[in-house]
Image (cartoon, helix red, strand yellow):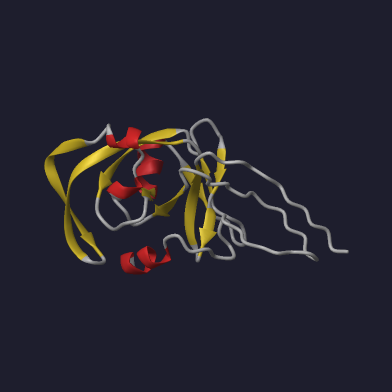
Length: 170
């Protein structure tokens, strides 16, 4: 699974936030994230993950400065076999308005443990049929999760610009 996820990094999908279109006779309404300089970070919400995870290369300079060595390495069973994490970092997720500590591993996409988020940060996760999943924080604020291939993501747009496009059919 990790290999498949790595192979999709940077690619554009029709149901992702990065929309490539040439639409003369379509109606498109959506949020476009403009990732001009620093790019975007898509966090996978993983119900089977015990820890939040991130690759060192996905960290900002400020996040790298929060790196700390763990008192004891943490063993993880992954799709590619057992690995050990010995460092973590502090990361602010603005869409969720929370700070998380994520273990640093190589070759993995940014991942938020859904169980950890719900238990430690008091989030509720609701996924109704035919609707995108929603995270609700302890103050009742809702964050829509964008599913890609039935996997829920929280999209963090750095230097983002929200734009609504409406191209009417003529």
